[in-house]
Image 1 (spheres, rainbow, N blue to C red):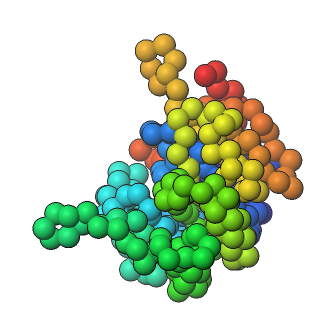
Image 2: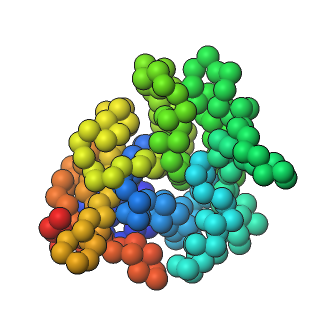
Length: 243
């Protein structure tokens, strides 16, 4: 087991996360998915000496670096030390003339989907001997294709690749309310699922987290209060959340 670097998370997940495991982080906008993933990678380097890789399919890497500084996490410094890699794998880019163009080299012409992304991940992990990995977000991959069977085949292959690496991997997925029908395919295929909630309660918003699934681990399935402060994410195992 490895320490996550997220206060309170190890307590509710049965002692930490397993090496060569793959966990889905599902949550809606503002729920803290990206922050949790970056904290997991950053703390892995500074507290456990474990290099990490972040595969960005949504955000500009510069925005990721800038947002991390709000928590005191200097990602650029770790990148220069070859302890962290932030890979821009967004499916589209734009030209100098302002036209939006697809990055076909990463997403098209594959007999099995996600083959190019899998290859990119393997190379990125090997370059810095990464022990932690985060992909933000898997939803961008699955929505590239209409054929559900094709997507399932690709996801099975991608998860197989991730679990074969000497890494602990987080797959981020969008989901508005943690509804059981959201991200159903991903939930079924991955060994672990954490659901992040960001719900309205009265006139305020409440953050919470639940370990929905974690194969081979005795964990709590209760929903716990979670907060984001200027120090990052902290979970309170002593506080059950009411959503």
